[in-house]
Image 1 (spheres, rainbow, N blue to C red):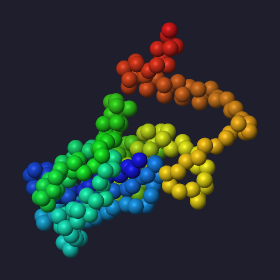
Image 2 (image 1 turned 180 degrees about the vertical axis):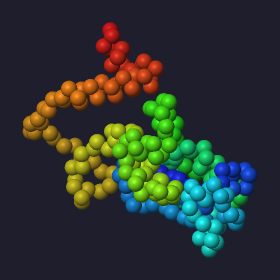
Image 3 (image 1 turned 180 degrees about the horizontal axis):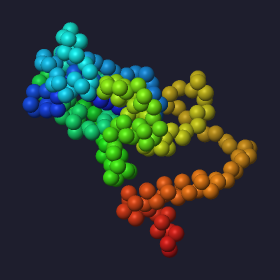
Image 4 (image 1 turned 90 degrees about the vertical axis):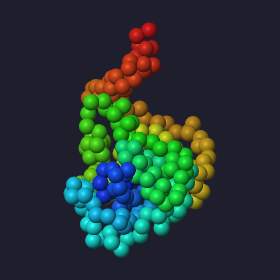
Length: 235
């Protein structure tokens, strides 16, 4: 599966009010592995950023003067995102701005070019109800190093979001055994016979058991008491 983690920076908070996208960053994962095939643009928005926005992203109006207009690279962006699953933190904000930019460029809405859009803010609120779920808060909670994030930046934030997402989803889809080594072509898999291996059994200690029970309790709470293991235990 091809997944793209996307973030934007803007001149302000209102796309309908005339604010524009000034930076776009995308990070690509294929089969949950970073590929390095990323996309990053700065744009000349044709207007100055609001003072509050400048405090967030620190991208000066002067720096953007010689950057391309969004419409001049819109097709390159659409070709890059075509058919991918797009993962965004607070997706409504970014998609709203992208839709406006695409409208001004004479293109269809963003979601018509991609497979789907996943909002990690919605995911986080379901997993951690009542807690702070900003990108910085999730980095702290999940042990993702965000020490280099003194200001918001689209590419850096997209990279952090990729780490956050993998932690949020526990990396279960990545538990595949590569039987072919480095010469194995991407996407090919071979069955591995493990019957000859003796796997050691390491028992969890009391602290690990307690942490496990706490995690199960949190999952049960989020599901509204519908987790199967709780129902079986009570049967």
